[in-house]
Structures are given as structure tokens and as C-alpha cells.
Amino acid sequence: WLRGRFLARGSLTLGVGSTHLEFVVDPDEAPILAARLASFELPASWRLRRGRGVVTWKSTERIVAFLSRLGASSSVLEAESRLVTRQLHGHLNRVLNAETSNLSRSVAASHRQRQAIERLEAAGRLGGLPPLERDVAKLRLDQPEASLGELAEQLGVSRPRVQRALERIESAAVHEPGGLERPAPA
Image (cartoon, rainbow, N blue to C red; front, side, top):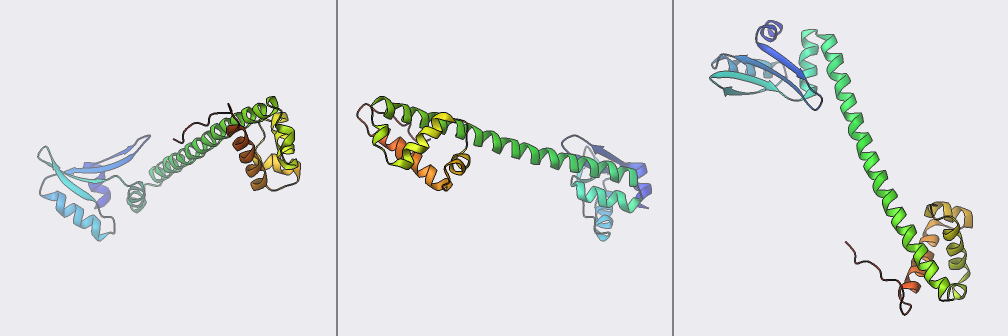
């Protein structure tokens, strides 16, 4: 019965961004069809559109369950393939956005740290810093692209110690008369 209703009155759209299945039926039949689908554990929404009853699913999972019940295995595979592709693209976009943001912050921090080190060096104050700060400063100048973890590994200390040393270097440069101006937090 469901297969016949779908073949006679149904349509399936497997779009790039969404999946949509609907039945366009007589207005009196829409609530009956929706109730029948709910009895098969496939609840659907229904409404009137231009004098016709429309029973709709927009959930890919429900559409796949419905198509599986009908025995439309090739359509199920296509819908699942599109769902997996969409989820993968979403995941990759989130990862790419996070990596881009992290990289931008790292580049800005490295630039700010190098400016502070160069300012202290120009003022002759770099040599007066504690040994760890001097070592971190030298390594940061030599390797501006290195992450804090990479700097820590090369110095044989923990990442938080490198981070604190760089913060102290920046603080020393900022608090020096005529030192670096730190941008206001966003």
C-alpha cells in the first residue's frame, strides 16, 4: 500500500543541502496517511498547500527508513551516501576553520613576541632576563614559526613554562618606557 501511494503521489528530492520526501494527496487523505505512517513508526508532518494535502519528511534518517521499508535499496544507498558526504564536509569545514583560527592566533602571537624580544634587545635589556627567558627569546627569534610545544621540546622544558617565559618577555617589553603598546582585548 505504501509503495503504491509513493509511486502514485510521492516525490523524493536528494539535494546537495537537504533531503525531502513528500506525498501530495487529497486534503482529506493527508491526516489519514500521516496517521498510517505513524503506525509504522514513521511519523510525518502534514499540511494543506494550494488545496492539496501534503505529507512530508525532511529528516534523512526517516526517509531512509521509509525507503528501506519499501525495498528501494538503490535509493537508500544514494540517500545514505549523500548523508555521509554532507556530514564529512561539515566535519572537515569545522576542522579547517579551527585550524585556520589557531594558525592565525599563533602567527599573531609569534609576531608580537618577536617584537617584544627585538625591543628588549635594542634597549640592551634582553641579557638581563633570567636564563630561561633568554633561551626562549633566542629560540623564538631563530624559529618564529615554531609552536610553543616545539619550542618547549627543543629546550627540554614544559610548554606552560615556555608560555610563561614569553608572557614575561612581553610584559618586560610593554612596561619598558617607550615599550610596545599591547592591543586592547577584543
